[in-house]
Image (tube, rainbow, N blue to C red):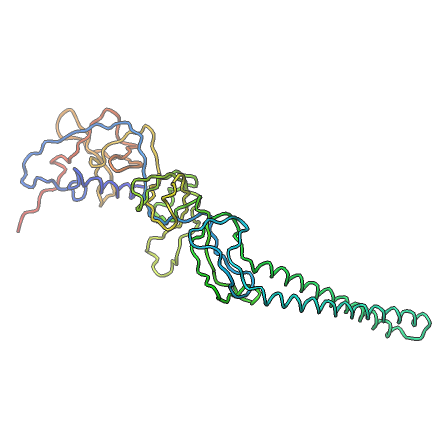
Length: 371
């Protein structure tokens, strides 16, 4: 935490105390006396935020792919169209499947006749066996032939059921109410379905754009401060006058990308954030800036960040506390969370004490002599 606090203190110090904080040198290199300005700590409620950029996406989005192979005969929707669940989006030419169904019906009739004939043969063999005109092996062969004929009939009927189901799938329908985002299908295009042994290409994409989310990435330094359900503020590059709220709905358990190429590189963790009350002007594909609260201190003792100094060599954070006489006292402090202006002092300083905005002359290294 001290290292993270150091980062913000360096940035904040660029206002009034940057020279002291970064280098420990006085702005007065002539050796003159500089009057110190003192400030008092105050009790405040502050929050620490991080900012990430992301892309607006629908919570529910589906690529529409064919379930059977065929040639596209009709396309009933265009990008931007609203569709209802079960509405037909694309029709595939059913001619080939209907021919297969006709063939399957004929095969069923033939299989039914063979099964009937095998049944009659089996009954005849049973009658002959009772009179000992046939042996057991001949009777068993007749029984097996009868069973095989029945199995063939069942298989033919199952094949017909598959073809009839596939015929229904030539009408590609919407799985839910939504909006057509894009259409890549073209009339006359021959598409492949799972029945061909390979996955077909997407013909269009639909989404429920009433529920949107931000997909973003957070670096490994900040991800530890995130929590599911944490509130966020969302701003949109394309709609600058709009601010929406949201909550973190997903935090990836692992960093994205590979880690073997550069072990020293910072890793990013994908997150998802719901978008509440964004309105119709916000659409999928827009960029968003998200402010996420990663820490909050209620009624905490705080001081301006520019009045807190840090020694990079010793990793010591300190302030200069006013005394009744003489130079202020250098005192080590323990800091907490911070925002753009203030930092929480957890230990080392009491309410009512005053601290200097600048380092006293005795704490400033002498200026180097010019060569």
